[in-house]
Amino acid sequence: MAERSRGSRRRLLLLLLLLAGSAASPAEEGGGRREAGGGEHGEEAARHHDSSYGTFASEFYDLRYLSEEGYPFPTAPPVDPFAKIRVDDCGKTKGCFRYGKPGCNAETCDYFLSYRRIGADVEFELSADTDGWVAVGFSSDKKMGGDDVMACVHDDNGRVRIQHFYNVGQWAKEIQRNPARDEEGVFENNRVTCRFKRPVYVPREETIVDLHLSWYYLFAWGPAIQGSITRHDIDSPPVSERVVSIYKYEDIFMPSAAYQTFSSPFCLLLIVALTFYLLMGTP
Image (cartoon, rainbow, N blue to C red):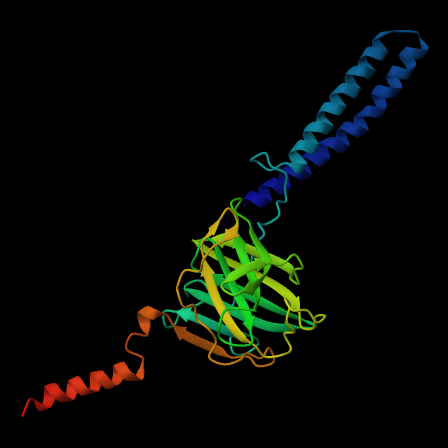
């Protein structure tokens, strides 16, 4: 109804504008005759008419292009600066790693990573429950040291920047040559989330690996101080059980420490032994 009312008002104003334009002809003709007679009243009437017409046109423009709230319309819808990570595609069109509570997703896992090939690039999505940084390392073994690392770092200005590091022993050294592109990131709900691409093939260099080869993936996250990463949150960050190929998509879940207490074979065996002892009793 409101839209129909605004449309009717515009048509009425347009009609009035046309009538005002047509009324200008007699006034101009009369003014011409008075000017021929040398009168000053014709000039004043013409000036008054021009002023009235300009005011009307200005009001018509304001009403036509301003909404009732006084804002220009039509207004563009708000644009989401970061498209949420889709977990429904995990294991189908992209590979995923989830670390945390069973059944968690990209917004609830302690750590989440996905990867997929797009042409000559690999797109990575990372998210972690932290206000500092989240990273993935590409390693030839399961140990930290000599690893190519991509990190998403939340700085003091609220931005999330994609940085490139190389692990020298237990220390991450920032590398100026950054293979990341199409970078985007966001810090929301105490989570750092980012998305970026990097080429599958790169010129041979110690600090940058070729992703067409298979690597162990190191998963880490932790706090940052003034936009600089510090030690990761847990002493033994999770690592992929086997090397990861970007040509194979899997959805792999890794329970966090709070959910793996009774998952080891030793703990299970101990539970069985205690249960048997309680059921059978002592001799």
